[in-house]
Length: 367
Image (cartoon, rainbow, N blue to C red; front, side, top):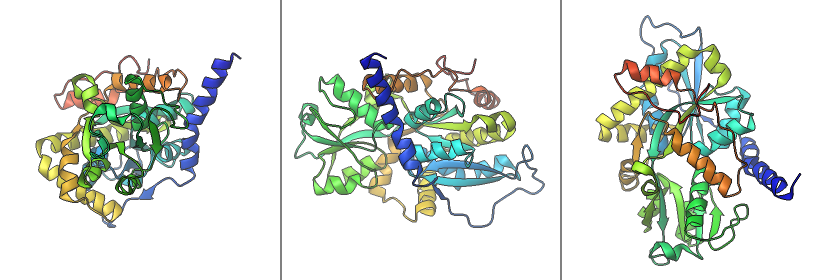
């Protein structure tokens, strides 16, 4: 095997290591259950299922799931089949839950979806819908960084090696002409991999000069005196790029398409309601965050964070393809074969029934 090929293969394996490491931390916590699942009178189980297990993160970028849970939309569409929820802190642990069969459907970012698809040889998951775009910013200490060129030589936090924001920052840095070793994070800019829960403390302590992070972490840093230096949306066509997808176990999709369609219908309904009632939706998402984690976001964080996220049904497949290519260019991923990662059949069925246009899989759909 040529040395270059062997190196790239090694890097690809290392990029997937967080999947295994974080999976060991557990599959996520159960969302709070008040013990009173609201099932409509006369409702019937879908596909004979007792329950459907739905996973999401306690992030505003997963607002579709937060609002859908809070307003009982998933339960309404599932009838007497109980919607059960699990809240995750990281994409790799959600992928592991999906792969193990302990989760049926999940809301997740593009990088873990791609890694999960590749890890299973394209056999264990499908992206079946979109959920959100945007909500990622480069926030810096304005005393240390006053312009984009000042980022050179500084310490910038990203959530995790090879995660969606890590790849985005590495790609942007390369575009500035700076060299960074993707694995160590060392180079013309130092990349510090830091959990989103820890980053605000690191920023406040001065151990990092800035961070390329999703909401609400970005707005938490601003509330501490940080300045938004760059909104990632400005780097993409029409300022749209996928930040949250909906994925499903392939086996579950094949055996229970009606249940999957019900969840997608609820997701579309949630996004429609969010966009029609932004203030109420923001409050509903925050209420669910508090129910799941015991802590709501303060207005100074919630308000700007919510405004920067666009809730859409389109999975923006072309941008996921670009994000995967950025990971390849950074040396974090071998050139992936993503053919078949999407199956938007049921989503387009739901959209048609709602009088909405079909969405595109960028040629990466099931053939």
